[in-house]
Image 1 (cartoon, chains in turn blue, orange, green):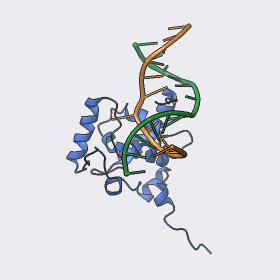
Image 2 (cartoon, rainbow, N blue to C red):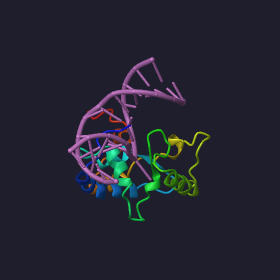
Image 3 (tube, chains in turn blue, yellow, cyan):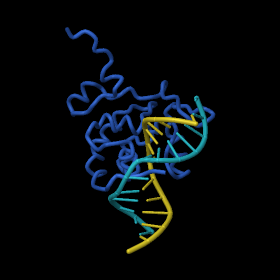
Length: 137
DNA sequence: CAGATGACTCCCA
DNA sequence: CTGGGAGCCATCT
């Protein structure tokens, strides 16, 4: 069970940025709610907020189907939407295993383009944010 | 007005 | 690697 559903105010505040991030995910790739929240990178933006925002997507340019949970499975609440999301992903070439999970190592989005992120003020994903910062001196 | 209800993730057994 | 539980409250009916 969950707690603290994001307030409508929070959703409206973050939705535009969340959608911009989701639009960066290319076809055939998927990302997670938590990852999107990290890229948005603002205080108060967490996975659940991203989920709430995904539920309100109306802009057909936002590939909401490419956002799944950390386990690599579809989190949509109703059976109907869940199937639709899966079919959209399969149409892009994403595959599911026998347990309805997506191999995130294989299909996971590696984060936004560094230049784009820098220009628009977004964060990169941790792995990419600090690939290796060994010798600076 | 009260009660049910959350597009999640992390932690531990 | 899987499964189950906690987090702790604003909205909606």
